[in-house]
Length: 217
Image (spheres, rainbow, N blue to C red):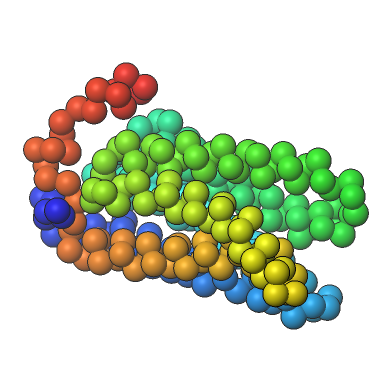
């Protein structure tokens, strides 16, 4: 059950939720542009992906630090903060590299760096979402929603394209992107609502140490 915090609003969550909605739109727009084919469609998709990464970096930094300490979704624990900020930085770095001549247009030679980027972002995403869950700042059980969403998006990236392929539609990038876009936008809307309502854990519960988290920190 969500209970009011000692503050009437959470500005970090209102701003962060709005940015998540924008991010969801951008993530969903990119594969649509690419599916149109042609050089123009690819260039437009790359530009949107760079924009999405920049918004993603803002989202990561804002949620990691918070406009005030109580609003940090990782309770300003260093593991969560570092993983979130690093995720945003790597995301922007990857999108800029992929949009450059040495990225998507460089041929088979990009497979190694691309896998390295994906591995780094996957590890950072898992660490960050686990940190959000364990911090227990977001209303329970939604504090575990980012981790669940990450798993659903990853599974969708594998399952949805294969289902489409059964019907003769080859769109390998659509599955995970569409599902991720929908979940990001939906979580953004929920976060705006929580921010306006000042939702969160009861102060007595929020200040109770988490033995497992304390041991890890």
